[in-house]
Length: 327
Ligand SMILES: C[S+](C)CC[C@H](N)C(=O)O
Ligand SMILES: N[C@@H](CCS)C(=O)O
Ligand SMILES: [Zn+2]
Image (tube, rainbow, N blue to C red):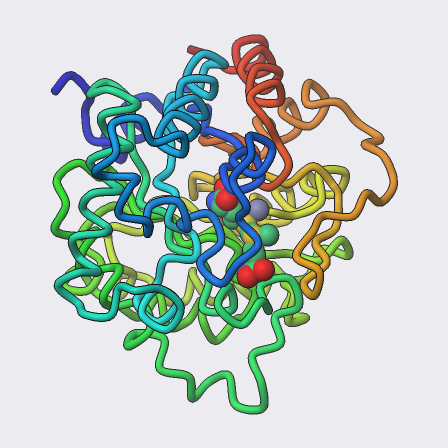
């Protein structure tokens, strides 16, 4: 293994910025995999033929996606497990037991590692609790969001990822609700034993989807002081609107100037949760060059793309990071 710990790398190279991959589910969709289903982009792996058929088309598609993100300059790549919680998988696929679920996740991680090689960082992707109810873009977690048992929901996926040596980091993605953030940040190293980040799902107006201000979230994190899990490595935004994302990063940097940030917006299109398709809305008013510069001016240490961003976007991000980052 040639890579170092991603947390140590970020700490000991304070000027350097890493490039993440792009929107995996939508990229697989572009390449012919139908992801509009309850486990979203994890669907190809659920089919046993993915693992047993040497001529599996889906295998070639997933491999091709990783190869193209790598060729674009990504240094950190994610597992295709956004909607692969035990609840989503066991309620919607033939995989019903924890034993079979663990096997599924370890196969997915091993496959991703094989695709990206030993020198790149691999992030275990965990979508929001709201991913399984499709409320990650509204933050609407029902009448009593504080009473949801987030740990019970996340624990099977977290335990599998904690134990997997191929994973360098865990990424909680598209988190839209303040109660969920507080729950994740209350877990100590026995629950999250690897470096992790939290990607927030933020409305175009700059508030978390549930209406909480980013300042309030920042102040909350500061108030935790030494109680904060030392594995908490980055905070940021993901799957937020391209045009507004730099303002969100700026708000987080203002309240948490010393915390490394992560930013990977979507293309700016909007997700229709009923039809499960992306609808084009408005156009990008800025270029990746513009917004990456703004991210870097505001504490971003990992930059990439989320839904509907492609290897071409990652190439533009790579160029901008090379232009503005101090390697
Ligand atoms: C667009 S993906 C990030 C999310 C998909 C959504 N949770 C769904 O189940 O349709
Ligand atoms: N990381 C996921 C989407 C999160 S919104 C993916 O790339 O499909
Ligand atoms: Zn996304």
